[in-house]
Length: 370
Image (cartoon, one colour):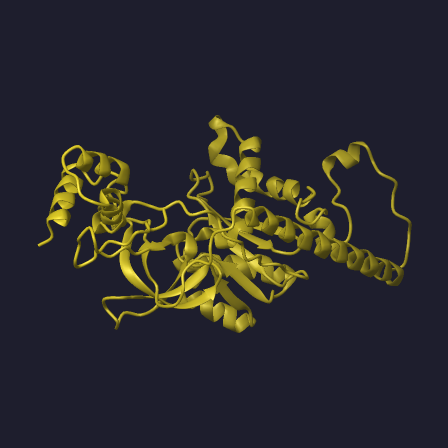
């Protein structure tokens, strides 16, 4: 066998799979050979044990914005919870948000199963606003169940979802959830955490009446064409609107909504451009190509095991296709019969397999990227 590989294996393992710098220093204190640094770094980068639990820190990649152009084009879905069980038995909040106007609906739920979600969709969104073109959610079983697929089929609604283990793909809803949680915190205190569902309608009032930075309008204005009347407006009333006929009102409302939507489209487009420019300052390389071998991160530990001692990186997987700059189709490189799946760039890292013949002369002069 290779003496260099044996020495590095003993030192690296006995030091608890420490990093490249410490392994090199411990080796240099005891041995010397040509290209010791290069061989040590290559050995550490190709260590399968280290690869199973050490995560890389790649720079961010250019986002792929999911822009919309009119109300009802895409509605985001998500669940907040579990929360403290309310006096009425509610433990979860089901959130639905129109991705163009930012209009939001939030329904307290006893359970987060597929039947509860489907009933809330029909009872709240469909009965009030009709069917959107698409629903977008994470890969939770309550959103990807057969029941939800049948509901979407009956309503003629397209169902899309994020890449597994990548909730950032539903970022608008995730940010909305944080906002709702913050408003709930403002309306409740430590002694009244079990009546949060009583305050939820007032959270919606606050959210709908606040100007959204992405559009420049309040969700209520983009959704209805008029400003939301708040309780403060009763104390300090604004001038009453002029009397008009339903036909005249409808004509004016149509113009108001058309103008607001056009402005919102421009603002949303500018926001996407600004976001891309921000990421472009720290853009990563071209990423992975078809045929590359990668490791894939599974952040959720198996049932009954500790997350602190979980090895989340598995592989190798082969890249079958590049679906988007940040989305790749993978298949197990060892078991070719395994089904392919989609993974996000942030959950991947290059696979560094051990070289079969490890000698100082055979090692490459260049190092793998950090």
